[in-house]
Length: 296
Image (cartoon, rainbow, N blue to C red; front, side):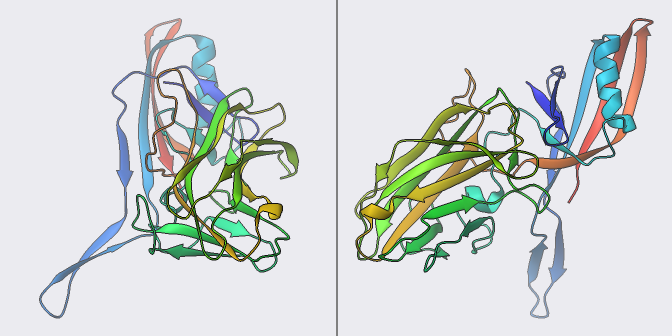
């Protein structure tokens, strides 16, 4: 399993850690008794993850790279962390197309007269989908998936690695037949566009769901963030139209996992490394274990 860590724009691959990685996911909650004699559970809006990574017989160079992050030589952090097993890089509400919070957190559109909403009227996976409504005269026609936090305008990415965007789309409203294209927009550290890669346009239908995909695409040199988006061709909209979106996913395809089957996403983690255990089995080899913990 390949593990990437670092500040966006300076992420590096660590040597593959040992198997059977303890990976704990906590959804902070409080159980309380109600006045009526019942019980309720209050949940925090996010989840927090912790990984225990360990290596045996590391070389001096491999050990030094890990120590750089733990000791702060790569900056104080927090760092972006990709554990290689996270199959959907989108946040919970994005990957669930608004089903987590019943709102449009993580999505934006700026076209005049365009709106987005969480809808339960027509779904595929459900219980809710993102409903993107456009006027008859489209001036924007761009739906953007926002970065996972305010510091990152997109998903931190690794140049030379492949990424894939996919969703299920369906038409609704007076004009339910429009052309939608999935796109991967690569940004530099300042948030300016480096490159824009587009998939094939898909024509929506009011009677069936269709795949809208930007197949495996390599992050270009200079790419720091990935900003997924969907475009509607203005010329295909003749009356008020609504595009319904379900099963959103951004993946890093591999030979073992092409990333074509939707799975829930938890987002790319921002992490700190609060603990490191170091053992010297012999003078030129190192056994290491580090705790990687997600910070809000």
